[in-house]
Picture 1 (spheres, rainbow, N blue to C red):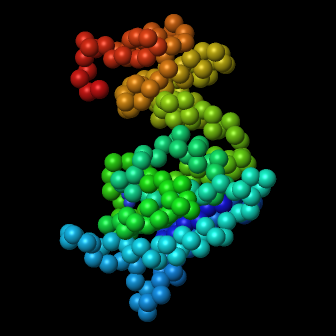
Picture 2: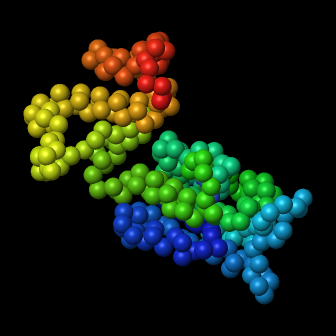
Picture 3: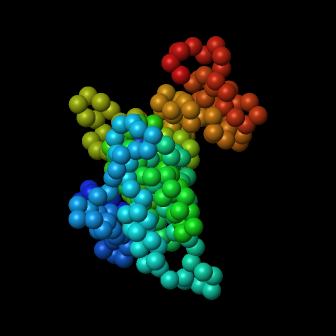
Length: 274
Ligand code: 6GU
């Protein structure tokens, strides 16, 4: 995969040289280039922003430096690998006004040949850039969640890590990708290591039992308990159609019944918090 990031703070992306993603770059699994938007300005002050039409607070990023930068990265793209022409690169525009970036999005984007990230600052990028870019890219404004960052750089660090670790060979043991939070729409179960007793706290006995069926069931039930407590919203999308009886009972104990293959919160189940 090839990734290009355009930013006015290229140094902000330095952590992408570390750890798993840095290793993937060294190993040639990921070709990642960071570009300084100011290199695509033509004025003496390397201006990238201006005041907003219609008034209001803050500054807006000017369109022309963005068009120059994006045209440059689109022109310098990987050659088609087969008889078909190379697909359009995906232009990801980090923004709290974007579509929500999820684990499913990460999987989808991990299949692409080229991703380009356009890091906005200030109040954002002139909207016409996204319209113009649609001729050269599949444009996807993306948000990490319902809070506001000062710019797209931190969001790009998060998205590149989430996508990069899904590329073949990046995570050493691919089994680690199977049993992690969100891989099955639920939160992950709690984990423990040695010593088995630590500061008067014992590891749950079932994990020391050697009974792999019991351990798998306990872990599933812990996933249900955690998800019901911390992220009850995720349970609405959970396929409860083929659950074993013990799992239905576990959900019943948490105040959820299975109705037409979906979990339904029992009205009288109290607690009040979920
Ligand atoms: Cl992707 N960008 C910015 N600037 N703020 C955000 C965000 C992205 N996701 C949540 N807040």
